[in-house]
Length: 120
Picture 1: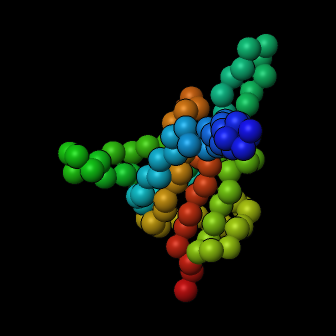
Picture 2 (picture 1 turned 180 degrees about the horizontal axis):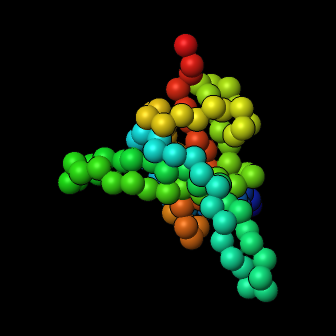
């Protein structure tokens, strides 16, 4: 009986932790090119504004720099050092070092976290 109960508990733990283990989160490190607000036409004539962080990243394999655009959404957490700040208060500047985490299981490059160095 104990073996059956422990097997059921172990199976429940595996099922509960599966989403966390299967997440494919990747962190890109680079320098900020720009923080822009893009406007995109939607079906029906509406316009949607999207905040985009342009970052220059050096490819680990080819050693060549490339520019990548990350979408900043309301759920994106922005850190200045170890402190969480609002995007408007972060004061992101061109040439600043940044680390952006994205989940590649979701379509697009929607930023989960944006980490900036602490200001001195």
